[in-house]
Structures are given as C-alpha cells and as structure tokens.
Image 1 (cartoon, rainbow, N blue to C red):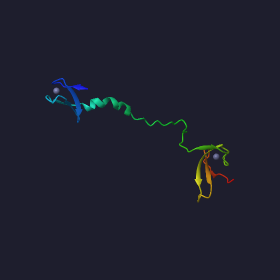
Image 2: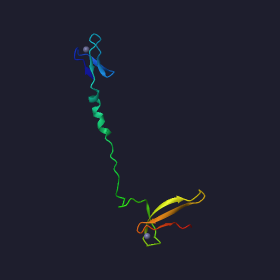
Image 3: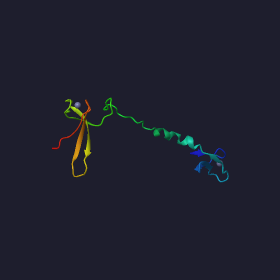
Length: 109
Ligand SMILES: [Zn+2]
Ligand SMILES: [Zn+2]
C-alpha cells in the first residue's frame, strides 16, 4: 500500500511503478522492487552437500560382508554382484578380501 506524494490518493502498482489513482494527478513513482522482494531471498540458502563420512573407512570401498577369506582367514571382504553372460544365470558375488586383497567368486550352491 502506498499513497501519492502529490495528492495523497491511493496508488496502484502497475508495470513496476506506482500509479496515482487520482486521474487529475496521474503521479507515478518507480517501485523499489529489489527492496520489496528482499525479504524472501533468505530462504533460498542452498543446503550444503553434507556427506556423512562416518561409514567410510580410510579407503573408499564398496559394501563389505562377513565372509572368510580362503587365503588369509580374514573375516571381511568387499563384494560386488555380477551377472555372468546371460540373464539365465543367477548373479554371482565376487569378493575381495579387505585384508590381503585376494579375489574369489562365491561358490555355486
Ligand atoms: Zn496523486
Ligand atoms: Zn585375505
């Protein structure tokens, strides 16, 4: 809401400026659009990319599972699922020992 500086009549916002509603006056004033909208920009603060590093060890590794390494006896290995050749065959898990780096594939059951 704004009132005309010249005649005191109510002004209406039109095309970025205030226009006096008194036809005999016709006074116009430039709107301070930046100031009017300034209040709403605060909520546009970007969420910082907070990455939870608590589950990541010193090395960036894939998912690990509890399985005994046939090479060194360590009980934890990184694993990945791979589908061999065709969709007819079930996925096979490949393990990489987190201790010695030995790689092996899951035995077929
Ligand atoms: Zn006026
Ligand atoms: Zn091992």
